Image 1 (spheres, rainbow, N blue to C red):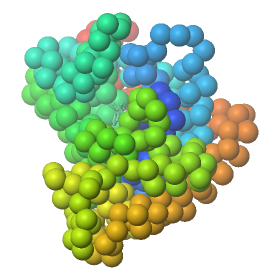
Image 2 (cartoon, rainbow, N blue to C red):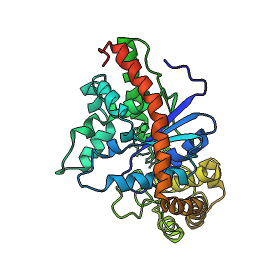
Image 3 (cartoon, helix red, strand yellow):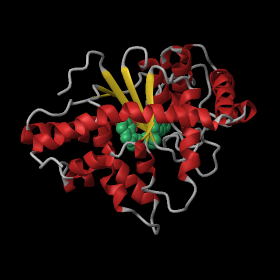
Image 4 (tube, helix red, strand yellow):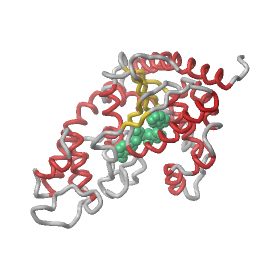
Length: 336
Ligand code: TYM
């Protein structure tokens, strides 16, 4: 295994639509914090997005937009390696090896696969949607990542990656670093503002339950004001209980994630849902507004974005080729 001195983090995001508050609080904020302490690698995983894309001309623009957003939230191209997955072909190459390392049974147990196929009833379901976690394992293992900062919904994918790494190391000798998943204390599972029993998601049909990082401030405030809570009244209506009060718990958790407090502590400050909604909306706007401004500026300079992604791909390939080579040698494949 490689002996890098600074620990590595790797995490990726799909370019499948506008980035939302769940992505930000669950993952992106930790990516930005991590670049000071870790050797950080972050991929825009366009190959993963192909599992659901069926029209031409969409994936490229979405990839550039996500790149602009990753820099807008604060990833610094001097410190973090930001790259596009398809610019580093080693992902496909190790991806196949990982497909042969995970079992059909393991892939069948992935809740994301079950959820996504349930939503696509009567639609085309690609084989890639099923084998997706093997490619994700390759994404992580290629960079000898020690930690993978993610939201809650990706934990199972890091688990299967760990199992694949351990199995490979057992079969072919010590080759891969076994990574740990890291989720934030608050914000690991941001729920829809309209249906607080479902996670906030890009595929939210109306958009009312999902706060996008590019939303105008007025739209953000409106979404929070209309957030679904419950009909409890009385002095202790505002309390943190995910099971019986999911809407209120979600608002408290978002507020806590933004202000750096605990949800129970935030609850102490409120007796009325209205005030909690307004304050949380305003706190979110204060965080998102500078990001939105930077995003629009960055999008204006496509040449600079392309340059940054080229530099990122070069740095990523340097690490990825060495790891792929190590894996192929461990298996004993005939060198080309
Ligand atoms: P993706 O693109 O769906 O989401 C990117 C990140 O955002 C987190 N997230 C959330 N966190 C909190 N609350 C939510 N409602 C919420 N929705 C999304 C996700 O947990 C994720 O961290 N399979 C991955 C992409 C991927 C990847 C990887 C991640 C491919 N290769 C290697 C880590 C390492 C995905 O679809 O994430």
